[in-house]
Length: 456
Ligand code: SAH
Image (spheres, rainbow, N blue to C red):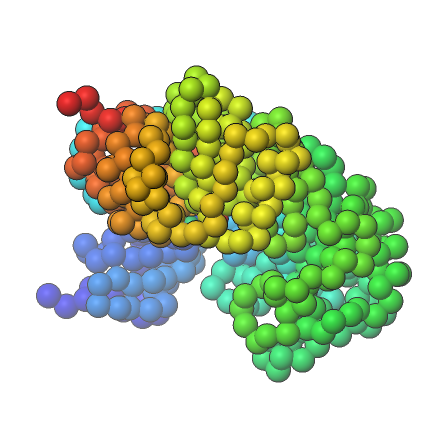
């Protein structure tokens, strides 16, 4: 059978689902069509841009009949900016989509037909939730522009305000644009590798009110540094740190490894679940602090701690979950592969006067075996791996340790489903699956799962 779709032709399509980048999915005579910016339930007129063997891609010419879930996005550039994929979808529908997405992955990839997935926990006000922005700086018609890249390109969509960021980010955008215009600062050009100012990163401590601004530069100093930090101070309440990050490489990686303080401290502080954490320019810290508290509280609840247990927190980052769990456990071991994060974790333990934790700098799959060799009994394993999920060797050793419970925190339902299948085949049963919306208006979803040992 031939392909029933032609480039440049226009078809009417009903959007049945959305894909991982928020693109609408529909069919034309059984053939799959991806339509960016379409909402589930829309009937749209689509012009086809590309036809492949198994699917086509098109763009909306007009919305013939809007979905019940289609709303006017709050942000004026929502349709161009690559930051938010699904702002045109009502928030309740976004949450329902995320629950369904987790359930689908567990069924399709994990083969779990009967596992129940709890409703995704959303935010009461899903705006201004992010504590970190990384904005490319450019010029357009002789004026500085800052914003996010348009979806799938490196064209900057210029913004003065972003409704998912903390308001300090808007203030930083204004100050940086004024600085670039006032002193004719050369902005970096990706094509030639010339120019100085590449990105501006802003990090905000939601509870402390402290703000850090990090200009990423292709050089080792900026002109008029004093005037720059004065402009930032005038615009930003709580400015506590300005750090230059040096990145001279021609790469898409935003941050370089070297940092230089030009104002205030080399870090900001924030609190999470009542504990204090130090945030350095390069350290990992969850980007939605309000929902992180919801997520961590669930994870600790699932761990079922009563003060007597020994807990392994694998992929522990700067030790956030470890330190929160430490207050309810006898002993915590944290494993993390990045040395800087482990240093931060140890310092965070000192800052909070917590002494029943031990951090190990190693790959989780390499270090976990020592608990078997040393005959350390582990009662609970908490794991929060990156998107690619856990290493198989890690999971094999985890089941040999035979903990009563495993709490899996995941940012990728597909690898979560794969790893849960392994655990289910080796003596554990999924007893709770709770998605949490850490990233409103995007298709990302975080899930916390309790796997309990089946009594033999
Ligand atoms: N639990 C932490 C961090 C989660 S992010 C928090 O909530 O803040 C995942 C972490 O796993 C990152 O810090 C990353 O550096 C680390 N990591 C990635 N692969 C690893 C591996 N194989 N072994 C140990 N740590 C790893």
